[in-house]
Image 1 (cartoon, rainbow, N blue to C red):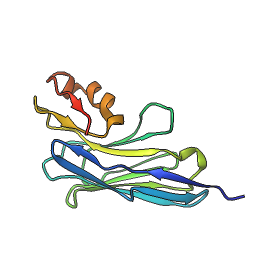
Image 2: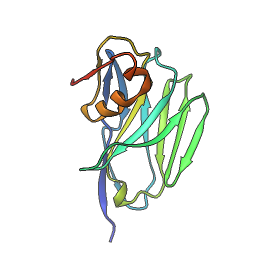
Image 3: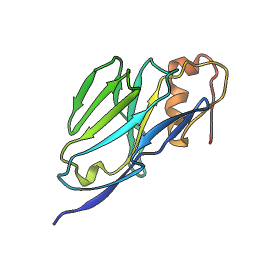
Length: 142
């Protein structure tokens, strides 16, 4: 039997800049390939992170991309970064039911005492980030 499942890709509000992720919800069948897209504002260029969070589990880091044209692959995932287009992709090869999750992209903030607003599930990851921990950059709910 072919199983169908969903991947969720929420948009994130970060320091009044919206990280656009699409599609928002993607239904795939086992064995299919799919690609998730993340566009980010021009003011963020340090690092781009991809995470996933399956229902009832903690946030799992997938990739950190550092430079234009960088491509990384791990298991069924391949991520790439195009800093000129301000976009990253996360490609899932041969999707499996166990990959059903919410996927997030995030960029390193240029952290300051200003409030950072983001999707609630990323709050702990931001609090643990050394740049923010050292500058009392507290996340708040949207």
